[in-house]
Length: 379
Image 1 (cartoon, helix red, strand yellow):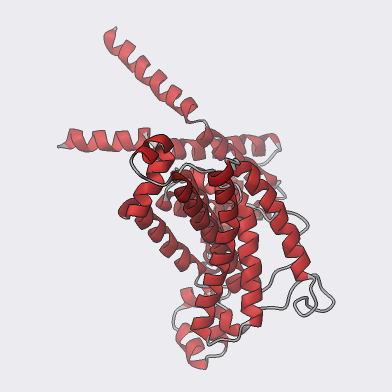
Image 2: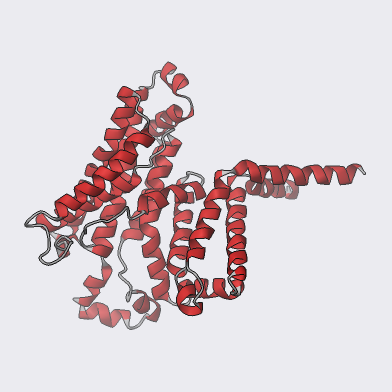
């Protein structure tokens, strides 16, 4: 019994989970080496970074806020990966979702809860259609989704900039839109501000009171619900079975009676909808508006890394997004506290993704160690 348990644990660490942990460790080691070369104590720097995330409830809240859109765009990329598609267009779909949410959040006048639901659905539909364009081009004409989604990313960026500058939507003397109505907000802070009873209740719970100093919103909870939904669709539904079958082997799936072209389009629509919801959550909970973009914001591209770190699974995307949120929020604090280069964090993230992307290297290490043990036993 004990041997079986140890065997299961060993197999877990030899699988994708183990490769991910080793890749994270390698990334942190390389970051430590660079910090040492630059003349900084890596243990002190990492201590400042993690203390800057976990020392106060407010800091934890900010890390979750940073992580939320990355979790959802990670789910978008992971969903497409599991169905045999590389959704590099999550960035553009995120932008379209943000824009749609800002438009619906400002122009529509609906009751509070209904307004939020309608805005999220509109953003998901708009981004889903945007992703569906790439799916249609792939299914109908064989246009590779990487090419089409890269082009759609840039179209989304310039479409956003055009719409933001339209009269009636552009905020005067700024390069941003009007803010969404309060009825469309998912921020909790606004609700506590208008409630004396709420403030009095919070004063009894210092942890929550400190956390509410950040722009806390319902985004993280929505991200967890979406992760559960993605897992359920892929693993417990006929649609998920068909999409995964197409991803594993298109010819076999088609022979089995599954509509490959239809599945490709549906997969990209759903992946796009997820990325669009990420954009909507960011607008409804944090930015409250959209602005002129000089370049890509990176949420969709970082979602690719999150998906890779999470082995293209729902729970993995949640954990990968949390890791990114911690590194991106806590990382810059090493610069303010120690004057150490915050770019080290990007190097750490890049290294982690690099080693996750080449699991054969990790497998070689395992096989080398196994051979060495075998030789020692033989001798």
